[in-house]
Image 1 (tube, rainbow, N blue to C red):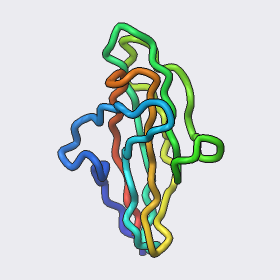
Image 2: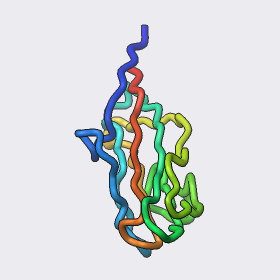
Image 3: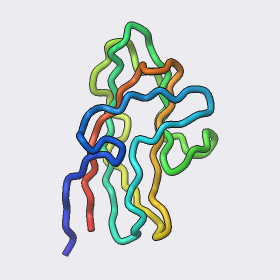
Image 4: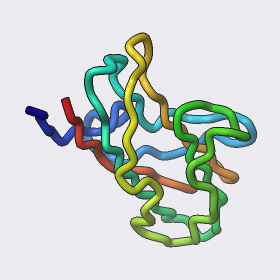
Length: 121
């Protein structure tokens, strides 16, 4: 029988929002699943923009390749709150390494990402 547990994002063990500062071709880790292939993470992510400028935001799912790994790419408008950017998609490690999720912005410090995972094992 499967066991479900709600988990904080790996890069925010306190549950605080993750301020995305990576620009250009750089990426910033948002969450990485455990390396074990015996569990799944159902990932729920939201973005906010507390600044006065619209910010282009990219969410890379599974790697850092801008050509193949982009799950979400769009503008997070100024003063936007709680924009759903990952609606419960499943991710899991391959037994050797975890499944990474990264963020990238057009303006440093313009977007905060927060969320949780439902770990299924």
